[in-house]
Length: 327
Image (cartoon, rainbow, N blue to C red; front, side, top):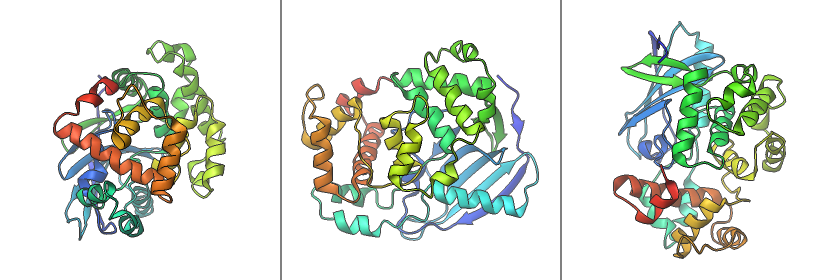
Protein backbone atom coordinates (compact mmCIF):
# COMPACT_ATOMS: atom_id res chain seq x y z
CA UNK A 1 0.00 0.00 0.00
CA UNK A 2 1.15 3.53 -0.76
CA UNK A 3 2.15 5.87 2.05
CA UNK A 4 -0.83 8.16 2.68
CA UNK A 5 -0.49 11.88 2.14
CA UNK A 6 -1.49 13.59 5.37
CA UNK A 7 -3.93 16.43 4.74
CA UNK A 8 -3.07 18.68 7.66
CA UNK A 9 -4.92 21.85 6.66
CA UNK A 10 -8.63 22.01 7.47
CA UNK A 11 -11.16 24.57 6.27
CA UNK A 12 -14.82 24.67 7.31
CA UNK A 13 -17.73 26.16 5.43
CA UNK A 14 -21.53 25.77 5.39
CA UNK A 15 -23.93 25.44 2.49
CA UNK A 16 -27.69 25.80 2.70
CA UNK A 17 -29.32 23.64 0.01
CA UNK A 18 -32.74 24.39 -1.36
CA UNK A 19 -35.55 22.78 0.62
CA UNK A 20 -36.75 20.11 0.77
CA UNK A 21 -33.42 18.29 0.99
CA UNK A 22 -32.75 14.70 1.98
CA UNK A 23 -29.12 14.48 3.07
CA UNK A 24 -28.58 10.73 3.26
CA UNK A 25 -30.58 9.88 0.13
CA UNK A 26 -28.52 12.43 -1.79
CA UNK A 27 -25.08 11.77 -0.34
CA UNK A 28 -25.31 7.99 -0.34
CA UNK A 29 -26.49 5.88 -3.25
CA UNK A 30 -26.81 2.15 -2.44
CA UNK A 31 -27.07 1.43 -6.16
CA UNK A 32 -23.52 2.70 -6.76
CA UNK A 33 -20.86 0.05 -6.60
CA UNK A 34 -18.33 0.43 -3.73
CA UNK A 35 -15.13 2.34 -4.49
CA UNK A 36 -12.11 3.29 -2.44
CA UNK A 37 -12.54 7.06 -2.69
CA UNK A 38 -15.46 7.51 -0.31
CA UNK A 39 -17.17 6.36 2.87
CA UNK A 40 -20.53 7.06 4.44
CA UNK A 41 -22.42 6.71 7.69
CA UNK A 42 -25.82 8.27 8.45
CA UNK A 43 -25.43 12.02 8.42
CA UNK A 44 -21.82 12.04 7.14
CA UNK A 45 -20.06 11.43 3.82
CA UNK A 46 -16.30 11.32 3.33
CA UNK A 47 -15.11 11.91 -0.22
CA UNK A 48 -11.86 12.64 -2.02
CA UNK A 49 -11.60 14.80 -5.09
CA UNK A 50 -8.95 16.32 -7.33
CA UNK A 51 -9.77 19.97 -7.92
CA UNK A 52 -7.51 22.16 -10.08
CA UNK A 53 -4.77 19.58 -9.58
CA UNK A 54 -5.02 19.69 -5.77
CA UNK A 55 -6.03 16.47 -3.97
CA UNK A 56 -8.68 17.19 -1.33
CA UNK A 57 -10.48 15.31 1.40
CA UNK A 58 -14.08 16.36 1.91
CA UNK A 59 -16.39 15.71 4.84
CA UNK A 60 -20.08 16.55 4.45
CA UNK A 61 -22.13 16.61 7.67
CA UNK A 62 -25.87 17.01 8.03
CA UNK A 63 -26.59 19.92 10.37
CA UNK A 64 -30.15 20.57 9.31
CA UNK A 65 -33.43 18.89 8.44
CA UNK A 66 -35.40 18.10 5.29
CA UNK A 67 -37.43 21.30 5.68
CA UNK A 68 -34.50 23.45 6.84
CA UNK A 69 -31.33 21.94 5.42
CA UNK A 70 -27.78 22.90 6.34
CA UNK A 71 -24.55 21.14 5.43
CA UNK A 72 -21.21 21.66 7.10
CA UNK A 73 -18.34 20.95 4.75
CA UNK A 74 -14.82 20.35 6.00
CA UNK A 75 -12.16 20.59 3.29
CA UNK A 76 -8.79 18.98 4.01
CA UNK A 77 -5.66 19.77 2.00
CA UNK A 78 -1.91 19.40 2.23
CA UNK A 79 -1.43 23.14 1.89
CA UNK A 80 -3.05 26.46 2.71
CA UNK A 81 -5.82 27.34 0.28
CA UNK A 82 -6.62 30.81 -1.04
CA UNK A 83 -10.13 32.19 -0.67
CA UNK A 84 -10.65 32.16 -4.44
CA UNK A 85 -9.82 28.43 -4.53
CA UNK A 86 -12.22 27.78 -1.66
CA UNK A 87 -15.03 29.66 -3.36
CA UNK A 88 -14.49 27.75 -6.59
CA UNK A 89 -14.60 24.30 -4.96
CA UNK A 90 -17.73 25.24 -2.99
CA UNK A 91 -19.50 26.32 -6.18
CA UNK A 92 -18.41 23.11 -7.86
CA UNK A 93 -19.78 20.99 -5.00
CA UNK A 94 -23.12 22.81 -5.20
CA UNK A 95 -23.26 21.86 -8.87
CA UNK A 96 -22.09 18.24 -8.56
CA UNK A 97 -24.45 17.40 -5.71
CA UNK A 98 -27.40 19.39 -7.08
CA UNK A 99 -27.60 21.35 -3.85
CA UNK A 100 -29.54 24.24 -5.41
CA UNK A 101 -31.96 22.06 -7.38
CA UNK A 102 -35.61 23.13 -7.39
CA UNK A 103 -37.77 20.01 -6.99
CA UNK A 104 -41.06 21.83 -6.47
CA UNK A 105 -42.48 21.25 -9.96
CA UNK A 106 -41.47 17.59 -10.00
CA UNK A 107 -42.94 16.99 -6.54
CA UNK A 108 -46.17 18.76 -7.41
CA UNK A 109 -46.59 17.10 -10.81
CA UNK A 110 -46.21 13.54 -9.53
CA UNK A 111 -47.41 13.71 -5.93
CA UNK A 112 -50.64 11.94 -6.87
CA UNK A 113 -49.06 9.26 -9.05
CA UNK A 114 -50.16 5.91 -7.58
CA UNK A 115 -46.56 4.63 -7.34
CA UNK A 116 -44.23 7.60 -7.61
CA UNK A 117 -46.19 9.80 -5.20
CA UNK A 118 -45.44 7.62 -2.18
CA UNK A 119 -41.76 7.26 -3.20
CA UNK A 120 -41.41 11.05 -3.45
CA UNK A 121 -42.82 11.40 0.06
CA UNK A 122 -40.55 8.64 1.34
CA UNK A 123 -37.40 10.25 -0.12
CA UNK A 124 -38.56 13.87 -0.14
CA UNK A 125 -35.72 16.12 -1.26
CA UNK A 126 -33.49 13.40 -2.75
CA UNK A 127 -31.22 14.64 -5.54
CA UNK A 128 -29.24 12.81 -8.20
CA UNK A 129 -25.56 13.64 -7.89
CA UNK A 130 -22.09 13.04 -9.25
CA UNK A 131 -19.37 13.21 -6.62
CA UNK A 132 -16.48 13.54 -9.08
CA UNK A 133 -15.51 15.14 -12.35
CA UNK A 134 -16.68 14.10 -15.81
CA UNK A 135 -13.30 12.41 -16.27
CA UNK A 136 -13.73 10.34 -13.11
CA UNK A 137 -17.24 9.38 -14.17
CA UNK A 138 -15.97 8.19 -17.54
CA UNK A 139 -13.25 6.08 -15.90
CA UNK A 140 -15.93 4.33 -13.83
CA UNK A 141 -18.22 3.95 -16.86
CA UNK A 142 -15.41 2.21 -18.74
CA UNK A 143 -14.65 -0.33 -16.00
CA UNK A 144 -18.36 -1.07 -15.71
CA UNK A 145 -18.62 -2.15 -19.35
CA UNK A 146 -19.49 -5.81 -19.90
CA UNK A 147 -18.36 -6.90 -16.45
CA UNK A 148 -19.87 -8.15 -13.24
CA UNK A 149 -20.01 -5.61 -10.43
CA UNK A 150 -17.32 -7.55 -8.55
CA UNK A 151 -14.93 -7.37 -11.49
CA UNK A 152 -15.61 -3.66 -11.97
CA UNK A 153 -14.81 -3.02 -8.31
CA UNK A 154 -11.53 -4.91 -8.68
CA UNK A 155 -10.53 -3.06 -11.85
CA UNK A 156 -11.18 0.37 -10.32
CA UNK A 157 -9.27 -0.58 -7.17
CA UNK A 158 -6.28 -1.67 -9.27
CA UNK A 159 -6.33 1.70 -11.06
CA UNK A 160 -6.50 3.57 -7.74
CA UNK A 161 -3.59 1.59 -6.35
CA UNK A 162 -1.38 2.15 -9.38
CA UNK A 163 -2.27 5.68 -10.46
CA UNK A 164 -4.22 7.34 -7.66
CA UNK A 165 -2.99 8.89 -4.44
CA UNK A 166 -3.83 7.81 -0.92
CA UNK A 167 -5.09 10.58 1.34
CA UNK A 168 -5.34 10.60 5.15
CA UNK A 169 -7.86 12.99 6.70
CA UNK A 170 -10.45 13.01 9.48
CA UNK A 171 -9.33 9.53 10.64
CA UNK A 172 -9.98 8.11 7.16
CA UNK A 173 -7.55 6.83 4.52
CA UNK A 174 -9.09 6.96 1.03
CA UNK A 175 -7.86 6.92 -2.55
CA UNK A 176 -8.06 9.98 -4.78
CA UNK A 177 -8.32 9.89 -8.57
CA UNK A 178 -5.32 10.40 -10.82
CA UNK A 179 -4.66 13.13 -13.36
CA UNK A 180 -5.62 12.16 -16.95
CA UNK A 181 -1.95 12.62 -17.87
CA UNK A 182 -1.04 9.60 -15.71
CA UNK A 183 -3.07 7.17 -17.81
CA UNK A 184 -2.20 8.98 -21.03
CA UNK A 185 1.52 8.40 -20.38
CA UNK A 186 1.06 4.74 -19.43
CA UNK A 187 1.74 2.04 -22.03
CA UNK A 188 -1.40 0.16 -22.92
CA UNK A 189 0.18 -3.15 -21.91
CA UNK A 190 0.77 -1.84 -18.38
CA UNK A 191 -2.96 -1.23 -18.10
CA UNK A 192 -3.75 -4.66 -19.51
CA UNK A 193 -1.48 -6.16 -16.86
CA UNK A 194 -3.98 -4.80 -14.32
CA UNK A 195 -6.57 -7.12 -15.88
CA UNK A 196 -8.75 -4.41 -17.35
CA UNK A 197 -8.76 -6.21 -20.72
CA UNK A 198 -9.84 -4.35 -23.84
CA UNK A 199 -10.83 -1.39 -21.64
CA UNK A 200 -7.16 -0.38 -21.55
CA UNK A 201 -7.48 1.26 -24.95
CA UNK A 202 -10.61 3.15 -23.88
CA UNK A 203 -8.94 4.35 -20.68
CA UNK A 204 -6.01 5.69 -22.67
CA UNK A 205 -8.02 7.25 -25.49
CA UNK A 206 -10.44 9.03 -23.13
CA UNK A 207 -7.53 10.27 -20.99
CA UNK A 208 -5.86 11.58 -24.15
CA UNK A 209 -9.04 13.51 -25.04
CA UNK A 210 -8.85 15.35 -21.71
CA UNK A 211 -5.10 15.97 -21.93
CA UNK A 212 -5.44 17.41 -25.44
CA UNK A 213 -8.50 19.49 -24.44
CA UNK A 214 -10.57 17.71 -27.07
CA UNK A 215 -13.29 17.62 -24.43
CA UNK A 216 -13.95 20.18 -21.70
CA UNK A 217 -16.51 19.45 -19.01
CA UNK A 218 -17.22 23.10 -18.27
CA UNK A 219 -17.81 23.99 -21.93
CA UNK A 220 -20.12 20.98 -22.26
CA UNK A 221 -22.21 22.14 -19.30
CA UNK A 222 -23.37 25.12 -21.36
CA UNK A 223 -24.58 23.03 -24.31
CA UNK A 224 -27.95 21.44 -24.98
CA UNK A 225 -28.50 17.70 -24.43
CA UNK A 226 -28.15 16.73 -28.09
CA UNK A 227 -24.84 18.56 -28.46
CA UNK A 228 -23.61 17.03 -25.20
CA UNK A 229 -24.63 13.60 -26.45
CA UNK A 230 -22.90 14.09 -29.80
CA UNK A 231 -19.60 15.17 -28.23
CA UNK A 232 -19.59 12.38 -25.68
CA UNK A 233 -20.26 9.73 -28.31
CA UNK A 234 -17.13 10.88 -30.16
CA UNK A 235 -15.04 9.55 -27.28
CA UNK A 236 -13.49 6.17 -27.96
CA UNK A 237 -15.29 3.33 -26.20
CA UNK A 238 -18.13 5.48 -24.85
CA UNK A 239 -21.55 4.20 -25.88
CA UNK A 240 -25.18 5.29 -25.51
CA UNK A 241 -25.65 3.68 -22.09
CA UNK A 242 -22.75 5.62 -20.57
CA UNK A 243 -23.88 8.81 -22.28
CA UNK A 244 -27.36 8.49 -20.80
CA UNK A 245 -25.95 8.18 -17.28
CA UNK A 246 -23.62 11.13 -17.85
CA UNK A 247 -26.36 13.42 -19.17
CA UNK A 248 -28.41 12.70 -16.07
CA UNK A 249 -25.82 12.51 -13.29
CA UNK A 250 -23.15 14.90 -14.56
CA UNK A 251 -25.10 17.39 -16.68
CA UNK A 252 -28.42 17.25 -14.82
CA UNK A 253 -30.66 16.50 -17.81
CA UNK A 254 -33.70 15.26 -15.89
CA UNK A 255 -35.78 14.15 -18.89
CA UNK A 256 -33.12 12.50 -21.04
CA UNK A 257 -33.93 8.82 -21.59
CA UNK A 258 -32.97 7.45 -25.00
CA UNK A 259 -31.36 4.11 -24.19
CA UNK A 260 -31.97 1.29 -21.71
CA UNK A 261 -29.31 -1.37 -21.17
CA UNK A 262 -30.30 -5.07 -21.08
CA UNK A 263 -29.62 -5.12 -17.33
CA UNK A 264 -31.92 -2.16 -16.72
CA UNK A 265 -34.48 -3.56 -19.14
CA UNK A 266 -34.96 -6.55 -16.85
CA UNK A 267 -35.12 -4.43 -13.70
CA UNK A 268 -37.51 -1.83 -15.13
CA UNK A 269 -39.84 -4.50 -16.52
CA UNK A 270 -40.00 -6.19 -13.13
CA UNK A 271 -40.26 -2.95 -11.18
CA UNK A 272 -42.88 -1.16 -13.25
CA UNK A 273 -44.73 -3.93 -15.09
CA UNK A 274 -44.25 -6.93 -12.76
CA UNK A 275 -42.79 -9.27 -15.37
CA UNK A 276 -40.29 -12.05 -14.67
CA UNK A 277 -36.70 -10.86 -15.05
CA UNK A 278 -36.11 -13.33 -17.88
CA UNK A 279 -39.11 -12.02 -19.85
CA UNK A 280 -38.67 -8.24 -20.01
CA UNK A 281 -40.58 -5.81 -22.19
CA UNK A 282 -38.72 -4.32 -25.17
CA UNK A 283 -36.69 -1.18 -24.63
CA UNK A 284 -38.85 0.69 -27.17
CA UNK A 285 -41.95 -0.23 -25.18
CA UNK A 286 -40.34 0.89 -21.90
CA UNK A 287 -39.19 4.23 -23.29
CA UNK A 288 -42.66 4.88 -24.69
CA UNK A 289 -44.16 3.91 -21.32
CA UNK A 290 -41.90 6.30 -19.42
CA UNK A 291 -42.50 9.09 -21.93
CA UNK A 292 -46.26 8.84 -21.55
CA UNK A 293 -46.13 8.57 -17.78
CA UNK A 294 -43.28 10.84 -16.71
CA UNK A 295 -42.86 13.31 -19.58
CA UNK A 296 -40.59 16.21 -18.63
CA UNK A 297 -38.89 14.25 -15.86
CA UNK A 298 -38.47 10.75 -17.27
CA UNK A 299 -34.99 10.02 -15.96
CA UNK A 300 -35.55 11.69 -12.60
CA UNK A 301 -38.77 9.74 -12.05
CA UNK A 302 -37.12 6.44 -12.99
CA UNK A 303 -34.20 7.31 -10.73
CA UNK A 304 -36.52 7.72 -7.73
CA UNK A 305 -37.82 4.19 -8.28
CA UNK A 306 -34.25 2.94 -8.77
CA UNK A 307 -32.94 4.51 -5.57
CA UNK A 308 -35.92 3.25 -3.59
CA UNK A 309 -35.28 -0.27 -4.85
CA UNK A 310 -31.61 -0.24 -3.83
CA UNK A 311 -32.39 1.24 -0.42
CA UNK A 312 -34.79 -1.67 0.07
CA UNK A 313 -31.99 -4.04 -0.91
CA UNK A 314 -29.66 -2.39 1.61
CA UNK A 315 -32.21 -2.56 4.40
CA UNK A 316 -33.20 -6.15 3.73
CA UNK A 317 -33.00 -8.20 0.59
CA UNK A 318 -34.65 -8.13 -2.79
CA UNK A 319 -34.12 -11.71 -3.88
CA UNK A 320 -34.79 -11.27 -7.58
CA UNK A 321 -32.25 -8.40 -7.76
CA UNK A 322 -29.31 -10.38 -6.37
CA UNK A 323 -28.84 -12.57 -9.42
CA UNK A 324 -28.59 -9.47 -11.59
CA UNK A 325 -26.02 -7.68 -9.42
CA UNK A 326 -23.47 -10.43 -8.79
CA UNK A 327 -21.29 -8.40 -6.43
